[in-house]
Length: 90
Figure 1 (cartoon, rainbow, N blue to C red):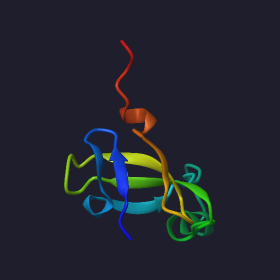
Figure 2 (cartoon, one colour):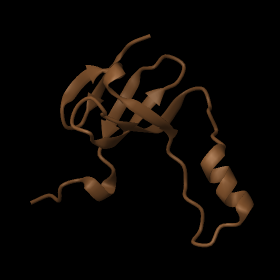
Figure 3 (cartoon, rainbow, N blue to C red):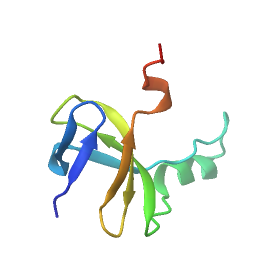
Figure 4 (cartoon, rainbow, N blue to C red):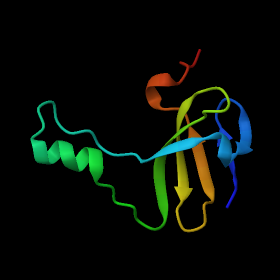
């Protein structure tokens, strides 16, 4: 199935130009236990419905960004740059 994904830098592009690394998760504390670290690296909620995910524009601007996508329909509800990479308002 193909769909369009809105790159915050390049605009709408075919999803085949991108890769995803899955849902956004919360990093463990500064000194995580082995169990906490394993949970962070390997386990995902993978819930049906709206999910925030990391995407990378590999065949374009090579930008990492966040997308909110409905996992049941692949409808992209929005995309944005991560807070650390947003240009400051001037």
